[in-house]
Image 1 (cartoon, rainbow, N blue to C red):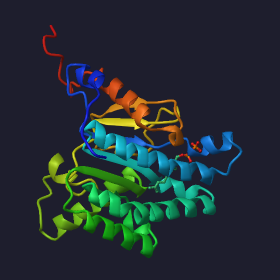
Image 2: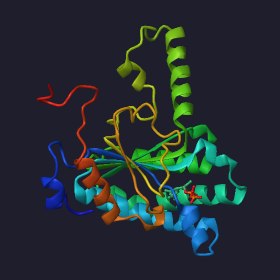
Image 3: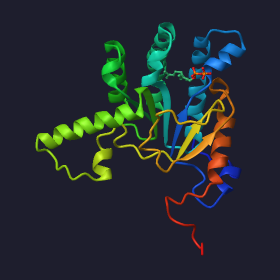
Image 4: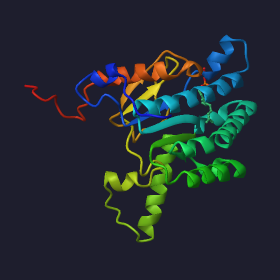
Length: 252
Ligand code: FPP
C-alpha cells in the first residue's frame, strides 16, 4: 500500500464522494469456493486470507481509510470444531505474519467482538497488535472476530446500565452516548457494506453502525475477491444517492 489513488472512472462518477471513507465487508463463500474444487472447506478460508491481504492493499490505494471485515461470527461456533479451530489459527498467523508490515505501512489494527471468548494466547496477541499500532492513522483495519451485532449491543447496554447504576452517567440516553459503548467506539459508521457470494443478508454484522450504509452484493466468492471486485463495489456505491432520510436536492 504505497499511494492513494482513485482511478479516474471512480473519481469522476456520481455526485457524492466517489470513494467511501469506511467499507465493511462480509467475506462470504470460502466454503463453496473450496467445495467446487474438491478441497476441504478450510482451504477456502486459507485462500480467504490471501483475498483479505489483496483487499487491504487495494483499499489503501483507492483512498479508503477504514476497512472492517467479518472474520468469525458468534454464530460460527456452530461449525465443526476443526473448522472453528482453523479460523482461530488463521487469525493468529495473520497477525503474527503481517503485523510488522502493517505497522510499517501505517495501519491501525483493531479487533471487535466478544474478547472473553477468545483463547488467552489469541486474546493477548490481539491486544498486543492493537497496542503496537495504536498511533497509526493512515489506514484502519478492523477485524470482527467472535463478533455478533446483537451480542455487541447487549454488551453495550449492560456496560451502560452498570455506569448508570454506579452514578457515572445519566440514564437519559442519546444515540451518540450509547455508540460510545459499542465495540466500534471511535470508528466512523460504514458508508458501504459489501457482501460476497451472492447472498443477500447482513447476518448480524454492524446492525447499529450500518443504519445508513449503502449495501452492495456481489456474486464473487470471497477467495476470488481482489482489487477489481473492490473497484466494482465502489463503482456501484458512486452511483447511489445518499439521502439519510431527507429528499434529493431540487425534489418538488
Ligand atoms: C464465510 O464463508 C467466511 C467465514 C465464516 C470466515 C471468513 C474468514 C476468512 C476470510 C479468513 C480468516 C481471516 C482472518 C484474518 C481470521 P463460508 O465458510 O460461510 O462460505 P460458504 O457460505 O460458501 O460455506
